[in-house]
Image 1: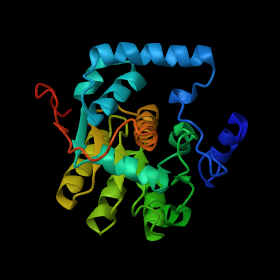
Image 2: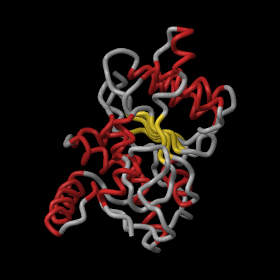
Image 3: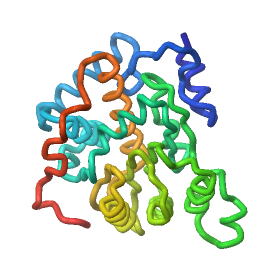
Length: 259
């Protein structure tokens, strides 16, 4: 069995998840493995479930958004295009890659409950960035797309709006991730980039989880992706099924406006 230390080391490379044998390490929310840590994690989620509905798989992602941000209003800011919870969980079960935009998001992806390779885009495409002047994250997405990395993968973007915009361009050109998690944060292009992801995801049938407004970030993106792993773990353990059609997947408070 892989130790927690080795699992962390595996995640720091592009080699894959924290599992190194045929056994899946049990999914542990937020990495909690000791009795005290598990009690804190469970108590926290119990409080979240008092604030957020617990009826659908989509509700689990809304709960995770609240859990990751500490803000109950985030449940109203999550948007779903298509059926990303089920397609994302199936991608985890099929051991497809999880591809993040930056190292911080990659570091937040759990090493338990899956055997998916975990890769980061940043660090690729340096020559393209130097030649064109585009951001390193945008260039890295385009380079990985050129290599075919994003097809059938879970594409997770938690920091860089330009990475999300580049991914949207790739989708328009034919790239088809299994699911997208996009929560880039900031005042410049963040809301615009998520609007664009939602638009191309809807137009081309690519399942996506996004949030509206300026808020988001690496921790939120990692948390939402980890919940896809958690759903997959529950499917593997026979606790939930992916066969039920999504119910009110796009339910949200219409009083919330795009900001």
